[in-house]
Structure formats: C-alpha cells, structure tokens
Length: 115
Image 1: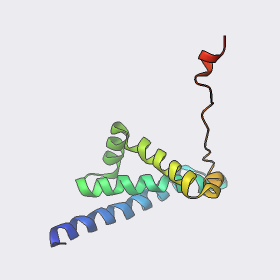
Image 2: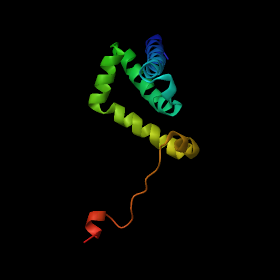
Image 3: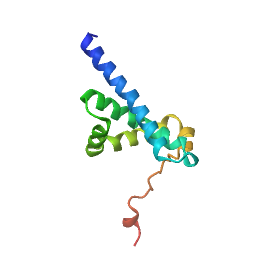
C-alpha cells in the first residue's frame, strides 16, 4: 500500500472516529439524562461512522455530509443494514434493541384475498 492510500485510509478512520464522537455527544445533548437509552444510541453509532468517514474523505463538515447522506438515501441504507445484521447475526441483541423480524403473510396480498 503506497503512502497516498495510507493517508486516505487514516483520514477516513479519523472521520469515522469523529463521527462516533459526534453521534454520542449529539445524542447526549438532545436526550435528558433520565430518558437516556443505550439501545437507541447503539443503533445510531454505525450511521455516525459512515457519515464521519464520508465527511473526512470529502473534506466537508459533518452536518453537510449528513444532509447529503440523507438526501441520497445512505441514512436509510445504513439503518436497514444495521437492523438486518442484528437480526441475522445476533437475534438476542436484535430483540434487546427492539429490532423485530416481521414475516410476510403467506397467501399474497391481504387486499386481494379478502372480498
């Protein structure tokens, strides 16, 4: 790996760490201490990692990276991937986080089957 790729990787890693810190501080700032919920915070950390890495790579502020990520759907994708991984890898953790698998109803669309 040449020096340029190492520099990029280090920049993205620093951005990811900064994203974690930003998410934790932002969550702690918005949520009163008596309402603090670790489960909600844990599900937001991966998004902070991704947005922080994007911000560092593009050399833009975290807020701008978050607005971009929201506009192009990165926020939704990361959220769905986190939930899917939680359900598949560690169902007990998914249950604690409130991430449930909703099975599809067999027999097709409910509107089509009722008359």
